[in-house]
Image (cartoon, rainbow, N blue to C red; front, side):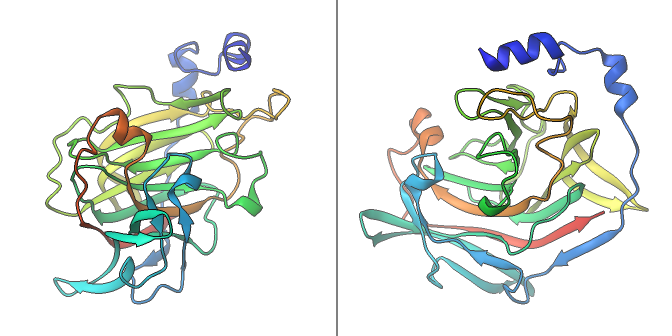
Length: 288
């Protein structure tokens, strides 16, 4: 009810706004490389240890700091961060896996580009996303604090999904874009690594596939662009925060390989679970 009222009165959803207003908000940005990690070490990352139930998605793995779940290796003479899921007991869990988040937050704003080879199999839910660390939440807990899902993949589905979460605490949460505009409209060959990116600016958010920065400009396969007119943040009392919130503070980058969860279960794709799977991260770039 609160979210619906906010939309009605303030026209925060693009479907209620005008195209002219959206176009006026567009701005071209020129980027320079601020940060790059080629994974010679893990100095920039924290290995998360947490049960799948704490993810909010009812995942069936326990994230572990075991070197069997999170480790560095070389593939084709390149350093690679490996997040590996395993059929292995951990307390009450039958599977373990890997999850890392950046030691320091990034932004606000910039172009974030991650090269990764993503596994496709039953019951797998790999993701690359951004969220403020708990101690840095300025707008409450997720999703009122904001969340940018740069890449989500589910089971054997061939699509790469993206979305931004915002609004209030569930059930007053909101997101953009809606289906069927929340995935790249191209066929992806998952046998190879790809770049997954998000351009995050005060006026808009734009998702990219296999993009590179050429002469300061982002070039690649374009996903959806979200106008800042769409996103907003509500207090626990349902009051609207200032314009720009919640995407006007630093966010941490998170990468994980989940097993199972609500989404996978809804697709009935967990009838079998691979005993082992790997997500390979080749590099992380931050452009300002």
